[in-house]
Length: 303
Image (tube, rainbow, N blue to C red):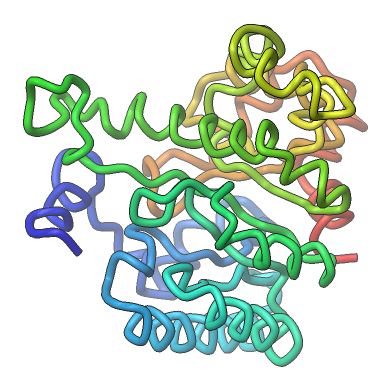
């Protein structure tokens, strides 16, 4: 990890919550929500930022073994997990993905919006997406960016936490856009991608994604309009108490492609309550809200 990078993850945006590592604290935090259950995924930073390929592969193995054990021991609260992959080594990622799904019961794998600055449409990652598609497993897409990614070329660090508040939604949208425009989604029609935080900027700027330079660059190579591919993505509701944003996500993706997600326990302390309130305030039938709260996750991940 570059010098000082971990500091940017620890300071300003994120605060330590005991529920990250203490099961008793986790039970206390989620007990008020009745039958609320979670899918386990690793938090930031991406595992490949921790060390070289052999180190990342070992950390991924350890993390997946532990998440699988937590699911086995507490299946009423942890219904499954998304495997960690050492994306700085494609062959190691494929081996760990196969092991995690076949031996540990992983529901899929988490990938980040870039791998040490390499975009996800780079050919080195195509075998990973192909294997996820072959396995019928889901790719969890989480943004990654830190304060060393400046907002302006004349500066040495992002100020005011913009690397997170605006940078992460951009990162998510950029990664999804690259998967669409590069043809990854066309080549893998059964690939399931679940984008964190409402798929970033995609639903809000969908009209721009359907036109302009991106569209003109691929209009003769993609057989379908870009938005047809964007609407194949799934998005979660981790938007931290922004009902208008959740409504936009529902309007763009449709209620069948939106899953309940909160970022808890990494996000705000009221993340679960705020997300429930967001969904309940949206213009949707009780049946469609039920799909967002649980039905879509059951259909996509557990069946």
